[in-house]
Structures are given as C-alpha cells and as structure tokens.
Length: 322
Image (cartoon, rainbow, N blue to C red; front, side, top):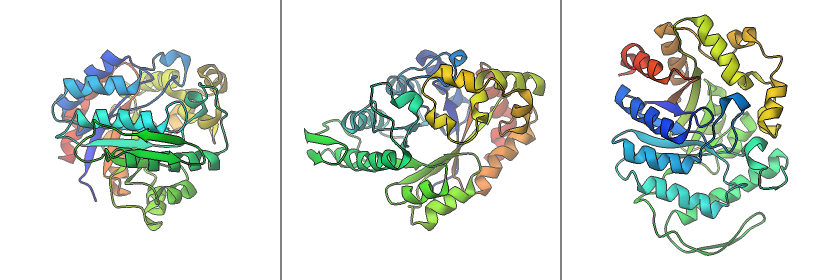
C-alpha cells in the first residue's frame, strides 16, 4: 500500500496553461502532496472555456515546482495520440521530475475528446481492447529498448525512446464499474476512479490488481456561502450530474450544454459536489475516500476561487491529515 497523499486537480477545462502552472505552484505552497492534470481536447461545457495540451502544461508545472508529485488523470492513449507518441510524452514528463513520483492514469476515454481525428467511436469492449494493447506498447517503450509491434489495433515499427526516466512511472487504470475494475487488474500498476467508490477498488483487488497507488477525486466548490458555491458549481460543472454513460458518449461541448439544460441548483445540492464552506464537510469527504482504502485522494475546486480554496485547505483542512 502506498503512503496516504492528498492532491489537487489542475482543471484543464477551466484554466489556460499559465494559470494552471500558477495553481500548481500554489498547491505545492499550500502543502498538497501531488497535482493531477486532466487530459482533454475539449472542455465539457462551452462556458468552461479552456483546454490546453496537458503535456505542455506539465512541462511548465515541472519547472515551476520543486517537490510536489505530478500525475495525469486520465489519458486515453488509443485514439487522438498513438501509443508511441503517448509513451514519449509520458517518458519526457517523468524524466523532468527525477526525484518525484509521476503517475500516469489511463482509461478508455470519452467521445468528447477522442473522435476529433475522425476515428469511429467503438463500443466499450473494443475501447478496452485498444487500451490494453496500448498499455502493452507504452510499457515496453518506457524501458528504452527498441520496440516493434503488430497488433490488432496498433502497429509500431522500430521505435525506441532515447529519453526515459530512471524507472518507469506507475500506469494506473481507471474504472467506473465493477466489471471494468476487474478487467483493469490484469494490466495496471494502480487504480483510478472518482469518489469514495470502495466497491470498485475491492473488485480491482479481488481480481488480483497490484497493491499500488489507488487514486480517487472529490469535487468541491468552496465559496463564502453555500448558495454562492452551488450557483458556481451549477454554472461551471453541471455535467457531473448527467446520468449513465452520457459523459462518455456525447461528442461536443454544445451537446453537453443541451443535455444539461434541465440540471438545476437542486440537482447540485443533492449530488456529490461538496458546496459547504464548513471545513468539517471537506475533511469528511476526503476521509470517506481514505476509509475506502484509497491512498491518493485529490480535490477538484470548481470555479475561479482557486487561491481562496488553497488558503482554506492549507489552514483548515490539510492539517487534519498530517
């Protein structure tokens, strides 16, 4: 079991790259153990307004920080970026932080981001097959040895990465259902999901998943009042209340805008986003994930009040976990 670590989300859908570097610097100063950046080509909603290239952003974060660990949560290395190029990006990012941990989260992706090169969006079983094959390719390339691969979904000819970290980063596979969690166990170094979903982590481990890092994210909106936080979360992150597989299947931010027209502030209040300004509620949200045996819990602050949230966590929340 890895040590307990509390992290902070770099929300690539809400901020540009320079702002994200500033947020990472602030998270390190506040005492967070790691930062994790999302990998999108589109935001979820038009009003979120940003979507910088995560690998460029991470280069800036690596240079601007000294101790905080880095992660990508999560990439889909089977569609808009070939596994060879993804492996090169991962190797370079990890090589930039030789004395820190770098975590590579992977999943089957969302149509929102992955259809953009014109590839057909297949059903989940095919996407999982593609993910498994891409992990195999990436893992071999991260050794720095020459790789050729002729698989069902990918071809690699005479590829070799000359810039690699001293040791390859953990590849943590994401899952949002128990069947996917069991499937991840055969191919992962660690596990990645959202919320206190202990049943998913149990399924992963019961299927033989390695006892590596187990990540989960909690979403919060800290503001002066709960009413203000609810309004901000409803405006900026209401897609999180969509049911079923819509988050994986809708193709554009405009479609998400259309699908979320009926999500109101009452839905946000009844959902999983922490909108209370009370530190105990934020502490409880993190602790509920730790109680489910996740050892890497990271906090996504929704909206512009990043500095206020970091100050709040530094003084009121993080001391409970030190």
